Length: 279
Ligand code: SF4
Ligand code: SF4
Image 1 (spheres, rainbow, N blue to C red):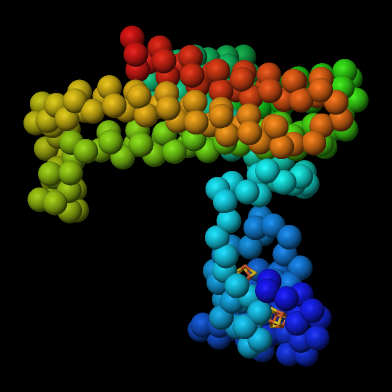
Image 2: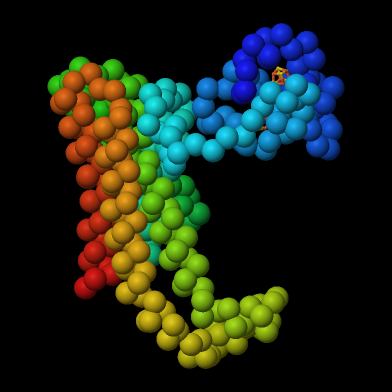
């Protein structure tokens, strides 16, 4: 927003006018936001339509420093907190399933629950998802939140918010790593992708003759992926620490508990990736 006074005096309100909802370009905001009142970019999908629709030319697109919003005192809703908790646990699963040893470890608890409840068939997937993405993260976050509440007298919601935001960079960096692992593991298939775009013949050919897949390239890039993995973990931790330094805490104890939560979460990745890629 260039000048909030212009918005106050604006009679047409093109940026939210229902008349312009269905225009092909220069639509009014269809995300039910009022651009003049947006305080951060959590709800805005950055479609830029309000920028085009404003007839007073009062909306500017400006660059800001990397992760600036994370350094402010963000107040998350419970839905956002729950979303971050699920995403942070999902990323643990994403990385762990890439290595057979860590896959066995992470699937042990849901496997045990399925076995104990005598669950079989497609319902096992539901139990896996509930255990990995709801129960385990809830236990992890609750431990630190309760310690914060009891020892540091931090409120429940603020504790959750502080921890999920502090952990977010590690989650994001590991999600980025997952994309690196996924894309690089597909390199041996590139030749076939061009010669057989539909892939049916290739799938049959490789199923019957797996030795035809040349995986030499994976051995060459493997050490570099290992280095990227460790660097991404460390990068995530560094950004987390910067966020914690900017966060507002009730006291020093609350801050230390958040740091410990980040180190425990990041440590899960660091130890797994180091053992997997370096030994
Ligand atoms: S952004 Fe533009 S159209 Fe929207 S209220 Fe402000 S001046 Fe009016
Ligand atoms: S950029 Fe954001 S505020 Fe503007 S129209 Fe799109 S969603 Fe709405």
